[in-house]
Structure formats: C-alpha cells, structure tokens
Length: 498
Figure 1 (cartoon, helix red, strand yellow):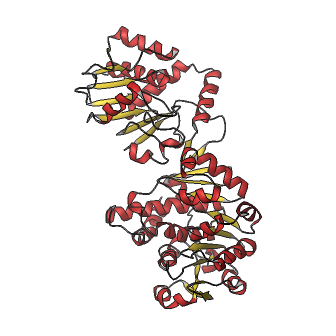
Figure 2: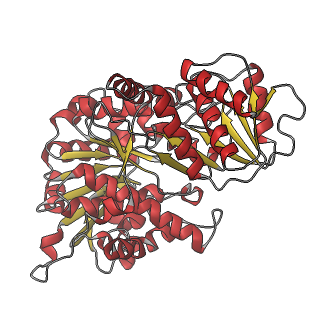
Figure 3: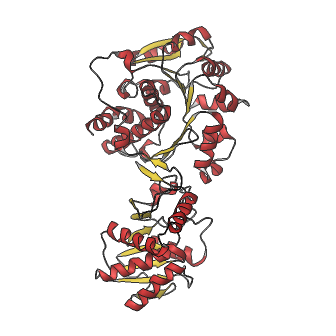
C-alpha cells in the first residue's frame, strides 16, 4: 500500500513538518540522499536546475555525486534561488562543482545522465521560454534521464501536460502524487520510485494498491462451504447488435474464476441459441425480448435477481426505453450490489434525476465509467475531468452515494471519502470488450467480498494484471478482451501464493 498525497496535501504536510522542528534544509538534504541512492549513476551527469526547492534538491545532489567521485555539472536556467537552495548552491561553488548557464552549446553534450530539476509538483500551466527549450533538449539528448520529484511540465494532480520531460526514472520526494500515476504518467516515466524523507501527512492520504493489498482480500476458503457461500450473481445484458458483450462478461474465466459461487446470465430470449452454447458452469436465464432488445418484465427481473448478492447490468444492453425501465427497476428493487457499466451508464446519464435515483437506490451501486461515460454522468467535459479527476470523481460519488470506478491508464476508485488507485493494465487492453470483462470480474468479487469499495478496487487490479499477462503472451496489437479473461485464473493463483 503506497500513500498518495495531492499537491496541496503535500505542500501542507511539508509545511507542518518544518513547523514541527525539521528545517527545510534538512529535508532537502534527505531528498538528495534518497535520489542519490535510487539511481545507478553513470557519469558525466548534467543536472538541469530551474529555481525553487526542486533546483535545491539538484544542488544538494551535485555535492553527493562529487563526493562519490562521479563527474557532474550544474546547468542553470536562471539566477533565482530559494533560501535553502542557495545554501547548497553556494556549497557547490565552494567545492568546485562545474556550473554552466542554459544557452551554452555544451550544456548537455557528452552527458550520460541528465537530471531534471526544473519544476516540482506544484507546476501548473504551459511550459514556455528557456524551460521549454531545456525540456525539448533533455528529451532529445539520448542520455539516461532522471526526473526529481515529478517530470517537469507534468501536472502533479492530474498527470497531464502539453510538454514535459520523458524520464527513464522518476524519483518522487516524500510521497507520490496522483500525477505520478494518472493519465499521461505511464507514457512519460519508464520507472518511478519514492524516497520518503520524514514528512507525515496532515490528513488521511489516498492509496495506491499493490499486489499484497489485493492478496489480503483473498483468504483461504474453508472446506466447510458450498456454492452459496460465495455468492449468487446475475449478469444482465445483450442485444441484437451487441451480443458479444454479455458473453465476455459471462465467460467462466471472468465470472466463476473470479470467485463467484453461481452465475445467472440474463439476456433477451432471442439470443439463446447464440449465448447458451458457451455457458457451461453459468446458468442461462432468457428474458423477454422485443424488437431485438430486452423487454421490461418486473416479474422476470425479480426471478433473475432473487437471492443474488451482486448484479451487473448494461453490457451490450442497448439504449431502448425498455432497458431503461429495467434499470430503474433494479435501482429500486435489487438487493446487494448493482454494478452499472457500458450501455447501463449511458441509460443512467440520460435521466435528469440520475443523481437522486442513485442516492435513493436500494442496492449499493458501483459505476464503472471511462472518461466519456463519466462526462455524460457528471455533466462536465472530458477536459474538465482530466484536469481534476480526483476532485470530480470524489464529489460525484459522495453526492450520489455510490462507488465510482473511473477507468483509464490508471484506475481511480472512490466512495466519496476514501480514494484508491490501481495502476495495473497495458495498451493492449484498449480494445473492445475489456470493460465487459471487468464487469464480470467485479460482479463476481462483489458477490463474496462485503466491502463494495474494496471489491471494485480488487476487480480493477485483477483485470489490469490479467491484461498485462495477456499482452506478454500475445502483443499490444493482437490481444483481445478474451485473452484478458483467460488470464484471470493465473493472476488469482499468484495472489493466493502471497
């Protein structure tokens, strides 16, 4: 479990630590030591420094490199220094560390390693001027690039940038921020590590979940148990045009192999001959249909969902009025947990009273939107969401009384209070059906794990890790959602070994 602090939380925690008696100069020295120890250094090293404390970390690092006998030089983009940074810069001058100014044609020439100390996590806006020139030069240098704190130009809260450094290693200081894992982060940093420097959070942090955290949710199962011990779940989806979605969600590897005891698969009756041959362990539950879509039938829905601990609705269900009526019925009558995905989310967002329906829902609702689907739900643009993913997700979940799983390169899961992140997953998962597989896994886990927030986080982590394994077996271009589903058992087997 890795603590994640927003930029503001980190700023206030840093200030509280200094007010508590630890000088900023000491924190800067600790940071430089952590950075020094995190990297396998190859000289010559060029440390590109902006201003402020991020540059100060670079000055203190230069002293450690010189002490270790590693050739290094400072490359200054300007003449402004923070008070603590000035202390270490003056020591560099006293120790004879080479200093050059940006604009020197030899500033980066011959450097085996370039250290990015231009901006810290507090940077906002567009990179311009000499900083933009320096970032372009770093990215084109061919050297091994180390970014200190966060890649300069990358927003510490959002992981978005118009222009930023691409690093081989990013060493965060004190704590990771959301920008280390969200949106563009995976594409901008090949590796990342955090160096703690003794800063204590002033309020409960967000959390990036690791394999050990997910494994703790999968205890050994007792011998004295039966299929009902691990949850009856129902999956509801499918239409004439989108019949593959419900089949993917229903695959044994995405349902029972994620721990469900019994799976009932509800789909429009006319799809029976298409879907039922693929159902061996799962139970086919044909529902009334009309004009290639699900027909609204409260009695059939009651029979399907009776005794279930979790229901997933929406995979390929279409946009008919009758599907919308079916969703309303589930929100008002279903027990346990209700996972709403895909077409279910689009149906939900079409309702002006969406928020109040969710707030008054009988089941605990788990929503699994990608950015565009969340945009429809919350009435904000995709750009707005990318600029404040944590704030908007948290606010929506709290107001709606639901669990929100916001999909992306990293997944954000929140109930409006706690915030979890998972960063498993890979480019090969950007293919049709990946969300349907997640819904199958999530419904299964929510059927036996009491905490819906943890169930959503576990499902997201498992789905992403299964995708990574599928990509290793195939490639990012050729893998399918079915490949991901097929790797779920291997992922859970590894969890059980921990």
